[in-house]
Image 1 (cartoon, rainbow, N blue to C red):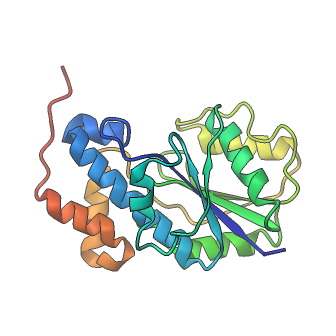
Image 2 (tube, rainbow, N blue to C red; image 1 turned 120 degrees about the vertical axis):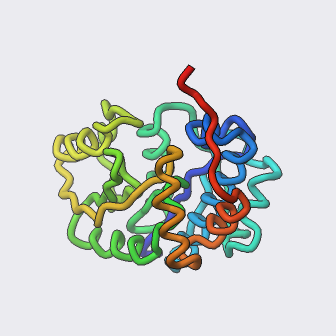
Length: 231
């Protein structure tokens, strides 16, 4: 059995249906362009970890944009699987359960942290040598990575308040209830709102190689202009 498998959660690039909080201020086309760049950089990060992986799609698995996201990232041959209906916990459990049939440990990431380093994925796998669960805390109270070592405990991830400042705390509480030992990775940042773009711009200005597609997308945007959404 292989030592680790990486699941990347993403969705088809449809303007108005991705990066909605950014799109509300920047416009749906810009939001979609940024999402595509973020997704490609996150896929590239997963590939650079050296572990095999899979793409878990929320929506149409054979949507043309998915192949575009894969192209040139090294993940062209990765299988595409459909995320089941349900909350994020249910979908993560499904993906991680499938991955744990392929490998002794499984990691899952999304597309909100385009500058994520493959070093953190390697560290997550290493931490699973002495724990059942690893989480990468995000600044907004959620997490940018979740990793599990088999077996997957019944009841884990139920009752978590998703997409809130309570998500990490609730996940840690759930882990305690099922008896998981948990390790935390260094905190990192997600890019969900217009204010998050300032940090991303600074990061890729210092080192464009950390997220080359995101760096190009931001350069194409030029100076940011925001819509007034206060009304």
